[in-house]
Image (cartoon, rainbow, N blue to C red; front, side):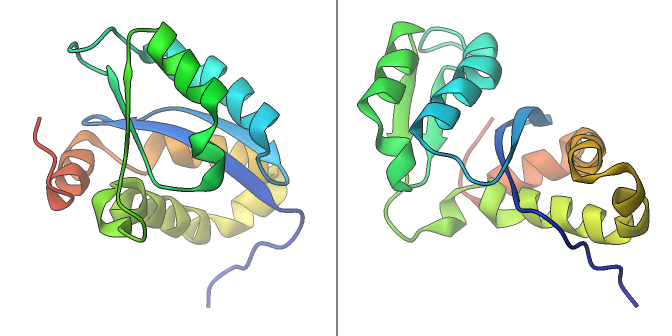
Length: 147
């Protein structure tokens, strides 16, 4: 029988590449534009390079929060490019098409421990170890991205 986690809602913004989760930002509750931009500054920009270099393209789904003009300006100022998947195409995002599923499975598997240490510590540990390089490459390939 699985261990079910109860308590406040947490949200995470995660950077992902061919090696797995690169960085993440966890907030209690949900993201609004200010929290989203704060997370982008903390975890996306430090890992970006100017286009066409590695880690120079940010691919997002069409959530309204992702369409902030301030967000686009931040990425462009770093020399990066922003691309959006077509609406309702979860199969084009490796996070929705495997990586977050692996994260949820890890949290369920270690749910009792997460309940003891807290969700933020549990999520941090899960992001560190739930997706390896092989799985990351597989999730990207399933979405049609090449490395």
